[in-house]
Amino acid sequence: MRNQYDEGDVGRMIDHLVTAIATDFAGDRSINIVGIRTRGETLAERLAQQLKQHGVKNIGRGVLDITLYRDDLSEIGPRPLVRPTQISVDINGAPLLLVDDVLFTGRSIRAALDALSDFGRPSAIRLAVLVDRGGRELPIQADYVGLTLKDVPRGHRVNVKLRETDGRDEILVEPK
Amino acid sequence: MTAETQHRWTHKHLLGLEQLSADDIRFVLDTADSFKEVSTRSIKKVPALRGRVVVNAFFEDSTRTRTSFTLAAQRLSADILDFSGKGSSVSKGETLIDTARNIEAMGVDIIVIRHSAAGAALQLAKTMKCSVVNAGDGAHEHPTQGLLDLYTMRERFGRIEGLKVAIVGDIANSRVARSNLFALTKLGAEVILVGPPTLLPKSFEQLGARVVHNFDEIVGEVDVINMLRVQFERIKSSQFPSVREFTRFFGLTWDRFQRCKKDVFVMHPGPMNRGIEISSDIADGPQSGILQQVTNGLAIRMAVLFLVGQVLV
Image (cartoon, rainbow over all chains, first blue to last red):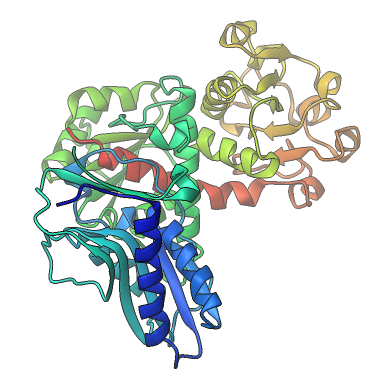
């Protein structure tokens, strides 16, 4: 298994995501794209930009902080700062694309789905992730995956770095 | 990431602002930003404290603080229990600690206490396993009021550092003044305490404030004026001048307001005595932050309950 993916690799993964998403949503009048803080937010922004270039119209944007919806708050102790959730668009009735960087146990996505249900009822919710590293603890799967990693040891971290926040695009698989 | 997002909250109790670091205080204010957003949603509730029990133990009268804590706990999905000194076992002679231990024995996670004795919250924190949040202890501290005041100032000016803040009135008996003073000085504001010598001992200078007995001397140079409530329960004492005299020298009258900075921000912790410490025209005017204080108080209390609730025993 490779443990490092560079700028070019990440670029191709995102292109692949964009193509698949654009094809599926071509018939929809509008779509809302919501990223999970913090890397999912950046990734969602990039997907939205490229989807626009692919002719997808009326893209609504939102950012979700799922801290307040986690089911493991009491197990992991003090957490970093809770950031505001920003969903100013009406998410009712239109398809919604949820974006995160890494899909692992599925608990973040479960929390995000709970949070979204407090904001409205999209016609459908789809999930796009840059990396699926396996290790699910809940029956949750992604609809769009940039990179599927198999056999990542549980103790390892899949670290996604993005240009906007980290200076360069890179995926590292490393021991914690 | 900035240093602030890396900060970890480690306080199981919130007893006062004197013990908090500047980073702790900023962390609560930043956390409150996120909780303010929750109150703008159509479903104003998050499951962060689901299954937890918060008890409001108020041994002293309160309307807005108690209501604010209750609503804050409800918006975090906690179960909330109201307990007041009057009409309870306290009036039958039970001690504070015994009462609190009995409440705790029912499986409580956070106890919010208001009491007339300074140090009551600290006493509880020493004997109880659950988190303790001080909602006002005698003339000692009222930390959530101090935090919401800072939050409101920061919202107005975009900063705390460098602000000149006057706190005016019965300083000696005011827990609001003390909590504000501790937090403001930690975050780099300049605090000017204003009041008659009987209600404002010089010793406050040791806490880092400028002490002034003539309101007019500083009225034109401050960015914020925080007017304290005239505490009528003490008005008969020899410490206190007559109401008319107090208004004349230490009230925020329309005349005095005209001599303030153009963008002065006026605050009051409530409940206010209109026409005594503050003129109605000012309290209801565009430079008053009084109702914003109440709105922000909810976000601050959500943040505080959430943060102390995360710290493991």
